[in-house]
Length: 278
Image (tube, rainbow, N blue to C red; front, side, top):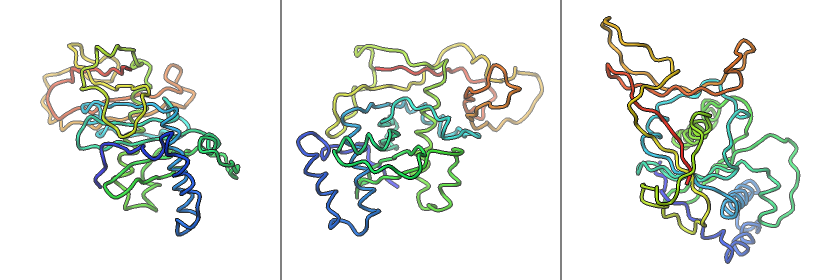
């Protein structure tokens, strides 16, 4: 599936949003109530982002590594939320731009001035927006249980590309939340990645940049073994993210560990990862 690089926010700007909201409220414009409901949720998520959202820009080397990283037994409830409305802009030209909204349902109805009808369940939900050349699409994922694509693909096998990108966004959130990778403020003069992405109608909201910085030292505490004289064939290793819950873990209990992927070379990695904000 080909995802567009820029999301179009023109319909949810201050001059237009009430007009387009009324179109969404009209049941005659839809085949059924479900289609109308998803359209309104998508619209309100975009409107909410224009007012309150932030953007996260992901360096290509970071997304390359995270694409080779697995999530191991991490639950939705443990997913770090850096902001309740985040637009993910990937510097990799092959990747699209995606909007992830995790705010409360009432906040979405308030932002487009319609009545909030409380849902029967209070499960957290993730609203995932993306755009193709044909249309804007929205998927609503219940935010409970383990983070696995298998359960989603059981009923939506044709959406594997979409869920690959959804889980890449999840991994960016986890990556950027690890304490040793805590974001650091930098000035606009320090930006060296071409300025803000050109997103249609996007307001001037905060931008966070997730970067990959090489350095001389080898990463400490990542479980990497020393070189020995023993000859062996090493074919590389996928990275992984996991959390520790058992009471036997005293220092790591409740924390998330990230082990980056190792390329198939007879050398130890000489890179570390940092996250900065702008």
